[in-house]
Length: 357
Image 1: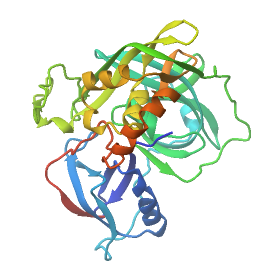
Image 2: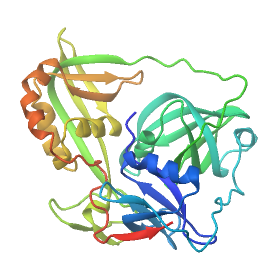
Image 3: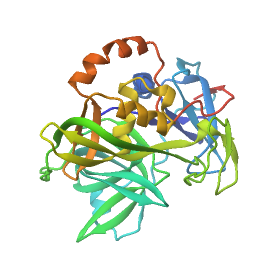
């Protein structure tokens, strides 16, 4: 699964830690090496933004234009972040519903359910994962962009989770403040339970109709926005009232596509956020990533579309079919030089600065 971004934690003082959100996945190796060697680093062209979990501090944003360099010894000793609220899955299973889980580390075993549900008037994608550690196994629900931050078989540190009851089982769900950071393998219990999951199916045919909705959310209060002016460089949040750069908003996708298959069947399929994001990335469409009508024109112009549909009837991936790939190869070759950025990012802040950690 494509990784859109990853989280890290840097120590910026004796007892001061900051969340880093890195939108340049190829920098993961540099962060991991610095972690393993307890090496001080300097983040060049990193940016500060109001923290999504604590408005009194800031998060650090690292983009493709940032760089990670070794730094001289800092005037404070290396120290692990505080983990007083770290829990194991066995502890989670003993909790009731609506309990906060500050931090836990777990291995992602399996992706199961995938749905699109309305949240505050905005279509949101959720995916349920079975997770484990040496003490047990449970389920974790992730939302929208968080889904693309994990892979089956890998281990992660999750923060700001909460519990729910699913029958007699206590399960977890992420929140808007959840941070996800890759860690070393945490292990697994003596036995794990793998769930039966309906297989994906391939659908191929002509596009008869398409709707792609691009919905911006405020990075501060997470409210969906209804009236962002086209080509405007700034927008005032309709809930919290803060004037922000338009590219600072988090963009999510939803929609549907109507396909006439080769055997004469007509299907109406629901598009997920991750499916549209991958289509934008794979087809070098960064220039229209926030423009729903332009993306619709691009999709309906395909001579043939091929989609992967999961057991819940959702499109989890789509792109041009074989015929479209052949006829469009010259177009793709010409687009190779275009810089592909993630669909939700843009340049988040105008000012850049160097950060030592």
